[in-house]
Amino acid sequence: MRKLVVAFMAGFLLPNLLIAQNTKPTTATSAKPIGHSIEIVLKPYQNTKVYIGTNYGRNRVLADSALLNDKSEGVFKSTTKLTPGIYFLVSPKYSILFDFLVDESQHFKIIADTLSLNAFQIIGSKENEIFKAYSKSINDLGMQLSSIENKYKTATNAKDSASFKELYLTKDKEVKAARANVIKTYPGSMTSFFLNVMQRPEAPAIPTINGKLDSLYPYYYVKNHFWDNVIFNDNRLIRTPFFEDKLDEYFKNYVSREPDSIIEEVQYMLTVAKTGKEIYPFLLFKFTNKYIAPEFMGQEKVFLHLFQNFFAKGDTVLLNEASKKSITERAYSMMANQLGLAAPSLIINTPENKKISLYDQKAPYTFLAFWDPTCSHCKVEIPRLDSFYKATWKDLQVKIFSVNINFKELAAWKNFIHENHLENWTHAYQTEEDLNKEIKAGLPTTIRQQYDVFKTPTFYLLDVNKKIIAKNLSLEQFNDFLKNANNKSAPKK
Image (cartoon, rainbow, N blue to C red; front, side, top):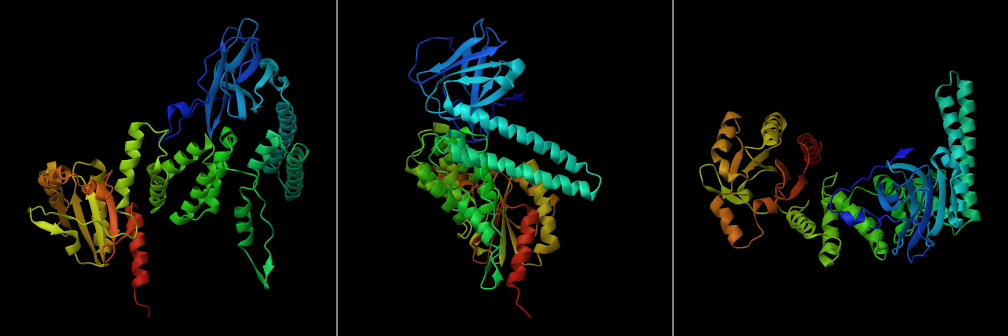
């Protein structure tokens, strides 16, 4: 039996979205409710709660509970309908017993015994008859495939390996044929719907065009057909264990890492999903969580697009006040420091309390380092930065503009500079007086907001015109970036 893990999505997902329906345990009754009424007989359990669960993306969540009587009988009941999708029966100890379907007709009966789970019955649901028959055939084929695969792995000679490989491919074709048969025989069924969602298009052979092989054709074919038979406003998509994985696969393998390409995809999906009561917020929060702290430099532009085109236009119903505040503050902190923009002006103080301007620093490259002398990570990274500077960057005419963001630790800051021999850098800080003036004036211009300094250290690389050309990279990545940029700008011989 599988163990149920009730997982919680990171970020701004609300607790009420983690419980598919907020229902109370009930005992068996003959009354027919407006919403759902799923009778259950589950031996040998008596006088205990059992549950049904479903997926919210790749996370498993509980949807309802029922109290079994001394005859092992109970009912999952509510005046609210369940969102149609793939569900599973859950034991009192939170083990998943088996899967079943919930469609629009939500009045049926489940009879099962834990001593023979494969013999469970679902009465009054045509959809589950189709699903169970398909599941049995595909499970049998799956076990055969697994057995053949194990034999292939342990084969001791080439002849046996070739034989098992051929047998595996034959069985795999049977699996695909079984799926295709269900889709053809029951085209409007939920089982067919889910099989269509699961499918990946098979890449065709590379064609020859004008006498040349078009090696990109299979890639674009798969990309263009990846979402055939899928409409993004269908709430059933997130009540499956495979939709979110397919979504991630698509963005990883078939969408460019360039922010504009990602924006085009998420805008299309969200526009179509807008009428989906559950899938729309799921997709919006998934993309928000992914791109508010993106894996690749520059992709925070996607988050800003989401903020400006969705959250700022009122799509905040499912957010509590803390989440609204957090998203808004992060968006405003990112707006002024995007790749390609001119770096925000910095006129601050040197250690000797003389005013100094970032834009007065003349160099082909300026490396901006925001750090705190009391930050343990800074104490490691800042000396490492100096090592890169002395080893390579100085020869590339990089100038380091170092900003202390903790005006309360001036003595510690100056001592750190001296002890680590950082005198070749330009050092500066914002005084408490200047900061208070900005706050009092209500100006959204504090250094932390201008440069999105929500962690330390925070690094930026600027070009000769003080445009931001790199940010949020590791020192090793900045080093590679500088080398590549210098090689491109070097005169060709």
